[in-house]
Image (cartoon, rainbow, N blue to C red; front, side, top):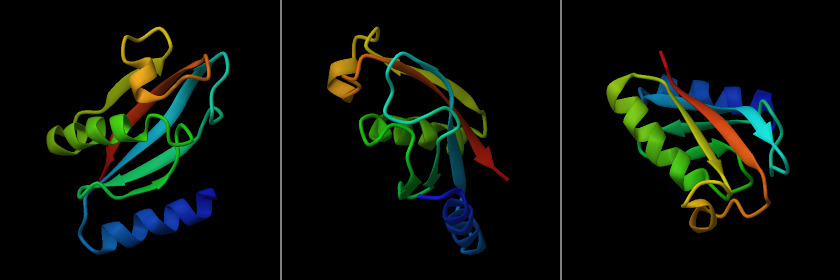
Length: 105
């Protein structure tokens, strides 16, 4: 999804009264499915737009986004082969990513 489309989707959700979190890849080590700066928006009902990992950790990012939406506190999370859950999360490409998740006002 192109950035313009993602912004339009976010604005549409917000105009409907939905709370929205934005996840951004802020660090990449080794091989990763999406480049630095990739973004995914998560609506308060769990609907997603965009991608931070090509699908391999999106569900985990959505769970973190739910907590960010509930608390309002931004969060920095890391996924990769060094984590115990890496294979179950699906980041088997051999790299690591760090994702910043924030609630949009």
